[in-house]
Length: 255
Image (cartoon, rainbow, N blue to C red):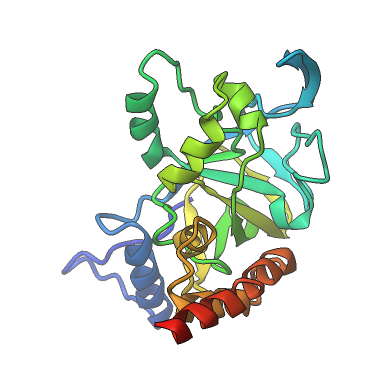
């Protein structure tokens, strides 16, 4: 599926106002071109393994699949979360991780074979990164539509996947968290599908803004307030940031 068609002078292509709108949105995500795509669709089922002397059930191990895959309100076909208290649900139906981060991690872990899906993501993408993707942004992939809900805050099972106890800390410190999609419209997706911008959220709060606040950058009171009131952000996140507001106000008064 082609997202946008660029007008070639003299080619006789008539662009509508919608075309110009989508062109502007596309440039805001992928500044050099409009190649926003799903490179890989990855799924995995629960498995049990031993970690630090205990048997752990996890679905962190995912592998790419071929062909078109059904995406429902709660997950991707062939994928299943192990612990629904921390994973899955409508707000975390699909985990997206930018392929742009893989070179960084290959530098960090040169001995590891970092194949697509290694971070537990359902979609490995290109053209979307945390600094330009906003909470509430809507996208179309294949016949499905999605909305960005929140960054990923990993549990210890990411450390299991990398066999490193410090992986969760390193992951958060890097700011390369990826983000979750909620499914607005069920449909089918496949590796190679273009990612089309449906609507950019008017509140203009990026995934990176939320991650930075979570990592302790609460001095930016304006962003803290906007995030705490952000309609597209799940209520648990908004409540967390609302609790930071009194501290931020006290610090500002003290200065």
